[in-house]
Length: 504
Ligand code: SF4
Ligand code: SF4
Ligand code: FES
Image: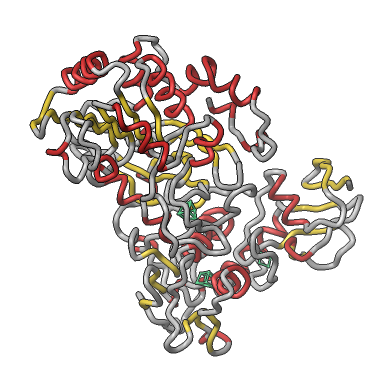
């Protein structure tokens, strides 16, 4: 460790680490464009200037290793003047089209200008123009004029995806970011350059002009696109007279799971959460009051006691699985997690994406929920009532003629809802809380709260009402049963450290 003095405050930092890393880690604001923790330093933007006692000129914090006893100034007239001059250079050819720029509200250039810029333009000559709204790939649009040439996007395709679609063309103030001829930016992680770009030069085709960012409410959640369970920010908004809707997912830093990035498929999977939800309960294809349908579920459970099969989705949360297990014990029912639909052998890669598309298969292992096909066949012999929870695969039980009552409890209306005797909607993944164990054994808590317009309950609430035990929330399920299960079972691979128990 080293002790350094920053703006008359002593802080303990890692000796030899990059100054910018430690300053940012200690909450000290250092403007920067080209440095990014996932991409390292590049030293091209010069925005991160600080004064270091003993040095004649200001130094860039992103390329200065820490030495014990350093005295640093990040504020003051001198350093503000330097930053202002650098900003003036950055903005010489910038179009200043903030009012129509999609990045407004989350643009580093705009923020730094408001912090330290605020000068009158001294430019008397025409600006060098670049191309606007250039389609550079499946999901990203480039505005060359807004670019500050930090090269984060270029380094992302060079160092992270290793696909190398982007480069800097030409020289001096004619330098622009471009794709190489015939090589569009269409790799499965391409949209991460939109988050990396500190200005509005790279924008998402999907999100641009859909919503001003200051209207969005960000919730912390995890992606349910595959078993990696990447950490996300879920940006949603409920406008007056409209339903609460998700506008985008953004990666949330998690060094144990996804680092700073997510895949494009997961990023765009928010659309599924917006569609086919907010449906009415149905009894034999006819709309029903939610309360009446819940009562019907209870009556069916009582009538078929001992002859019930629960078919669970491996994407339910741990809390929901525990609750269904409790329900199955109460009604002497069979439980199966057999599900072939949650695999896509063409989806996975060697970075984040996994072939197993379920978000909590490890939860099945933890709670000993059976997944074998032969056991499902065995269980189904004496079954009269099958209840499919969180899944839409009625074909799995089609061949069992003895099953004459079928129930679906699902977040979206089943494709063949008329084939079910009862359909009870439950809250979607992004509308309820829950814990999930990802493919590597990390336990995470998801807690997005996208609102519903129609009355709909979470699965835990539905079961809590049926059982009459007043256990409805994740916290209550953990206190009643999950804490003991997690404690009793030896989970070598589950990293309790990454479990955000404080959120429960
Ligand atoms: S497009 Fe954005 S990320 Fe790429 S160099 Fe320009 S400013 Fe940086
Ligand atoms: S890798 Fe999987 S969990 Fe991560 S963003 Fe993509 S689909 Fe979602
Ligand atoms: S962040 Fe230091 S030079 Fe760009």
